[in-house]
Amino acid sequence: MTTYSAFAKFYDEAMGDMSWKIDFLKQLLKEDVPGAKSVLELACGTGTMLKGLSSDYSVAGADLSPEMVELAKKKLPDADIHVGDMTSYDFGKTFDIVLCVYDSINHLMGWEQWQALFANVDKHLAAGGVFIFDFNTIERLKWLTDNPPFGRELGDDYMFMKIWDRNGNFEWDIRVFEKQSDGYFILHKDPVQEVSFPVGQVTDEAAKHFSIEKVIDAKGLEQSNPNWRPFVVCRKK
Image (cartoon, rainbow, N blue to C red):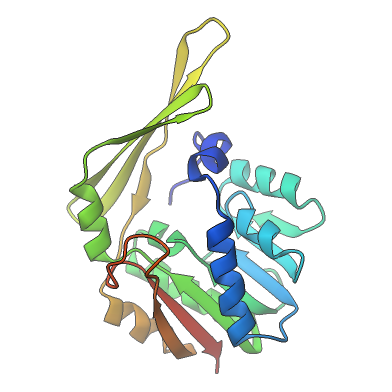
């Protein structure tokens, strides 16, 4: 899995305003688990989602990247956040809500890892609790590879990105040029790996552990193609 070791310190600025993503999650949680008190996010990154939810819930998280976890702990110094693999890290307790969102699951590069994630979520989800995950479909990842390279300014720095299809493994080639005090730039390269599987295969596997309540088209969140990013809402059996 990608460790985000080079990209972590640029991540929040590169992602920009995430409030609309937080609001989308809040609405889902309000509808599906109105009495929930605790949230676990697997692959929590820099903690932006958890920070946005922390006013309504007790939050916890795990991420494989020590650099991302360090940033998350700065945002949420009192939260239960750890460096750990989302497929296996054990918090030793259960939660009303478990999240693995905004294509985090796509960083698991083998089908066995996707299966292990669902099993680990099952272990951490309280009775009647809800698990929400989404993923980039194969169709969306292939569409992204057809796009030209993308660039943007990050303050005084510059980021360039191109997505490649490596025989079904999709690589986000991310390069950040960090400006130095002498006017020169340091290049940071952090290839981000993603893979996907057919939607039916994914939902069938999730259904072995949970009751799938709905699969939501994320229309309005990003591009409007309904086959690109399904959000799957599951409940503990």
